[in-house]
Length: 390
Length: 161
Image (tube, rainbow over all chains, first blue to last red; front, side):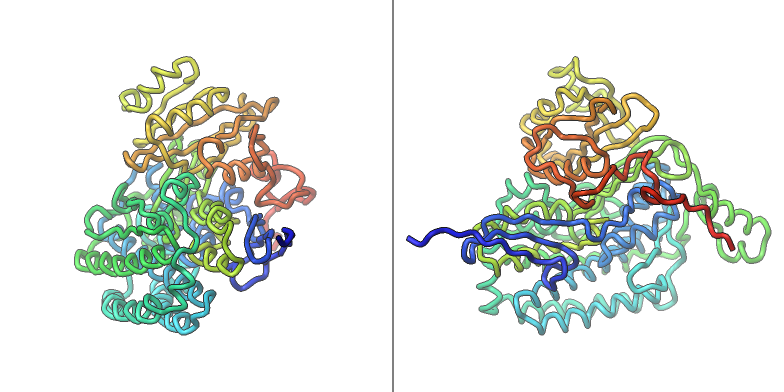
């Protein structure tokens, strides 16, 4: 009998497979993982503290920088929480555009996931292809909001501006070409022997354990739990669209891969339905106490200028109370818990980041497997450190 | 209404003495309970009322009020698609509360974060260390008396030019 000797290995924070600045201290028995101690917080910027000192509108750009791969999903969760506190309704057109952008954001995030996950396990081609497709969405982001990543496009009560001419054509192009690209990824991976050997049976977590560890989103659905906030607690008009919620069976990395791929196809499906139902109309609610005036009025009238100045400098008061609003972000349940004391700034804003909670289960998923499989587990959890550390 | 909520009725039946307040705002039910019974109540909610997912643990600092802190638990029931918020007051002099990580594993990291940023000590927690700040950090940043600029720095007075 060989004696058992534990070796401690440090991985990260600067490591290409940790998807950011994640540091893992791993205790190994040979190549078998005995214990993982994650160290996080390298990217902590104190977003929750900062937001207590900013008006409700000034916090929107901060939310862009949480999950920087899916900025519009973060914006959406935040503004929905503020709108719930204010108890206001937004115009239908704004809601529909929000859904289109949120689903494009899901595609964008999942494309980075498939690219990096595949690259980590050794399939470089998918990385190049997926980033090529992601560029189309990035260009659309830039045309729409002026920024490729930090979009800051949604506003409390609607959107910052209506979409540009030709937006629908650009989205249609994405919707029409993407299913073909998904076929390419599946062709490259689903029956690829190396991919299958590396992912089947890897990072298994049962449905019961996954719920116990608070895992949400595609990672939970990969464990066979049929739960999607867009369908079960609809927000922003998701109840109008029909879509399938994919679930896995074997609770492993391969099933989570299949779930996310179907999710991408369903996202395209939702965008198509939303585009068909898009009607002309206002994109900002008619609530002068809360919403910015139209730019034309700001530039040409003194009343408009004063109005803009007042909203920008002072903000708007929000009724006293507390709400929790969550959205199905690409990584899982992204929740905002806002406590208002009746002032123009949140008294407390708590962000419930999906990646943070999902990462908590990493030891459960990787213990007892080989060190090389840990990289696949990190990839399948689809974490973003900007959101974990906030 | 909050009073007719199934969970509230059951809680009133079983833990009548420990319920401090029941509120409904924008369709969300919040139940404030005594911190001594938090583990028993959470275990009851999980096992009997099927609130199987603990989505979030956090706290709010009401500086100047007594009790100063409020520990907040956001629960979700996947079978019933239903949310419930449990709050428990924590005083500054006895800044502790029992851990619910024995009920849900997800509480482990969430409570560590709450400890790190608010300084609320979760009793019987298996691994109560700082999580976002460094291990040798002094103070708890999300407390209201913690300066926004960080310790030992002049407060920002705005741009001079």
